[in-house]
Length: 419
Length: 138
Image 1 (cartoon, chains in turn brown, blue):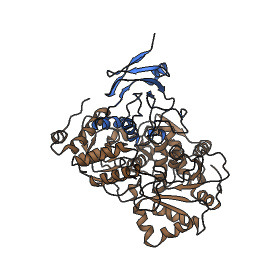
Image 2: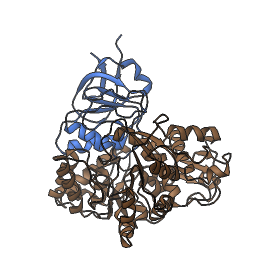
Image 3: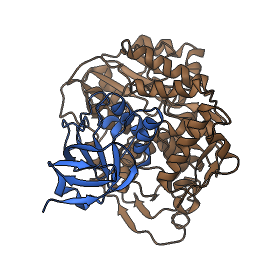
């Protein structure tokens, strides 16, 4: 299959809108060729994951686009960067990396992107319409956008996300096409006890199991009673997208393309059914921890994806004014920070030992104390997956309540029964 | 007879010669590979601690983050990329790192597609992946 650029797209690739737009169009077209997409389609918005510093190459790329006069053609929010521009937390990134990270963030601003700096743009006012085509990066944002909002995006990698935003186009491929959004697998959780399903850890634990079991298959979760709320779906999707290449899930009776199991399956038969047992859930929960029965913990990290205001409410009520022995790093975006600052809540939390991290998070940039062999406790399936490789800490997984009690005590405290 | 295969070119690039590293499990480049050195950093990966830098890398699959392209491009820019990539399936997110590196004018390794069932024959051998996609043992 060969890609055909339209009469509108060809002059852009030929440089009539400047060198930056031409480079962006070539990148989109080359990706479309690689994917076997026959054409490009217009997009309504973009979420840009590419402004996170991984090394100088990304900064040089963004600056080349700026030099070429490129601007985004659609609404484009920014995912986390490598620096806390709000100055809440200290990022231990030294020169010359620090300067290059700042140059990168500035280049994306000059391309016309919104300074949202969050991995939860869908909780910061960027919620594309059901059925609209968009180009989003950041695996958790992609899976939320597809699954919970019902907008259509593939998992856009760094560089393709900004190239799509500049051209206003994306390859017609994958999850943009309705036939690829139909579930072919059932993930049945009806055998799990109601008290487990009602617990906060159920969603990140099941998400990590789901991602490992389904890979990149579109599945439908069956047996869920009632809507678990956006924060639970956020945790499920983030965990699933960190253990598997999950871009879209359905939950029967909950997500918009799955009024029931039959509809999610496109009225066909599933190719596989996974009946989740309590043992499978317990095993998935155990696998989130890499630390073996530690006596003490060195830090707690929450907020992957970024905490919502409701999650800060829960944190505050669990801490209940007590002084923490080890810090809780609470990662969030400026959309929440501005609300926390309105009535002194930020300062009150900080006085108790909570380290608020804005615009970024503890697994993408060095914020945690440099402590090889340290133990990090978290309630996030995504932090649990990435912290060992990115921070050198081993991970202890627990609920938010357990994380708070452990931070107060300075050692692991588990109050709730395991699954 | 020495094993040989014809890979399908996914992204053109320079001929690569080096020791074959056949990954036994899918990997997430972001979080799984150190962008500074090319060392496998994912403690849950069976080959944690080995390096992909300078190797002909055979990938049975990729998982996880949409930042894989940035990690691969950084490895190309700092000279720690594999000398060639052999993928069971084309992964557009990962390969985009090579496409953008080419746009930047940097020399990139060739990336080809080959069925993973044929990977084990090359494991640990000195392998050449040519610009035409042919894979042979030196």
